[in-house]
Image (cartoon, rainbow, N blue to C red; front, top):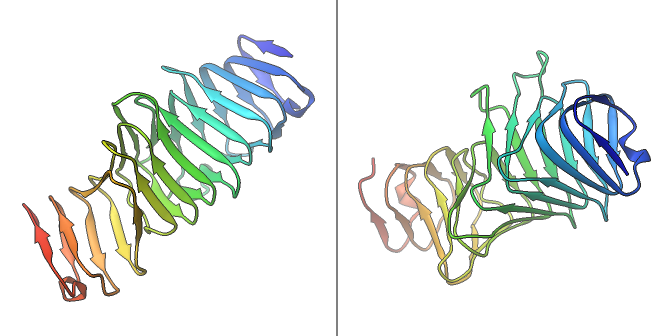
Length: 239
């Protein structure tokens, strides 16, 4: 095990049990093979990366945060109750990027959120595994673009995807749960796969329909490509 209350760490892969880092910086290429508890702030510089290996777990506790200027790759489990700030200005010098690989679980709990702190819309969440929202009935949100090839499942509460998405992969909302798109760009170039008894809500995003869909409903935002709706379109407070 290893515990630090400040400073810079490299060689995280040497910790085979529990690592607890408070207000620390990761240097270089780091692999997590055990469990990492993040307290305070964890900085991942532009020339550094953190990979959560299969069987390992990264825990971002409530009210704690990661400042990501480099790359975070998940092949195991990320349990996120705090927040992650992603910095990406096209590699000058920051190129913050999130990757949830096939077979991995990214579990957002409570009011966890991911922010694009430069606001340049260059950051992406690449999901090939499972992105899950669980915990209480509150709202977890992601302000970066979701490139989805895997599965998004909301078991409780709301997952608000304010950075837009390509609507790839599959989206599932359980009873009483909500997947919402209150902002961001959405180009629909394939038939979306929506599952479950919960709600999927477009309530502020800019949607461009590029392929035929049987029906479409929006409760706010901007729509183009209305001719792609071959059945019923229901638009409320839209442009």
